[in-house]
Amino acid sequence: MVNANVKNLIKILVGAAWLDGKIQPEERQYLQQLAQEKGVAAEPDIQPLLHELKPVQPTECYEWIQEYLGDRLSTEDVHSLLEAISGLIYRDGEVAIAEAKLLTKLESLNPANDTPQLGHSDVLKRIQKLYRRWVDRS
Image 1 (tube, rainbow, N blue to C red):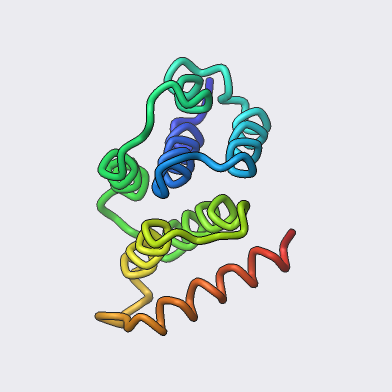
Image 2: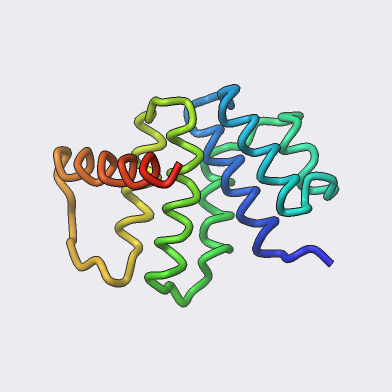
C-alpha cells in the first residue's frame, strides 16, 4: 500500500516543476528518481504526471498543496514541504518568478512566521537562504 502523503508530495513537486511553463531536464530527472525511490512511479495517477502527458496548471498545484497541508498547519509540515519544493526548484539553477511566489506563499503559511507582508528584498533573501541550505545538503 502506497502512502497517500507520498503520492500527494510527488504531485505537488510535479506541479511546482510546471510553474515556469515547462519541466526542466534536471527537474524531470529528479522527479523520476524520487518517485522511484518512494515507490510511486508506477501509480496510475502519478505515471501520467511524470511522463508529462498533460501540463499541470498552477491552480492544480496550489490545490494539491492545500490538500497536503490540510486545515491544521504545523510549522514542521510547512518547513518540510518548503524544503522539498526548494530541492526541486533549484535543480536547474534558476528560480522563476512563479516559483519564487510559491515559496513565498508557503513561507507565509508557516504558523511560526508572524511577518504579515514581505518586501521584494526580503523574498530574495529568503530564497537565497533556502538555496544555500539546499546546496549545503547536496
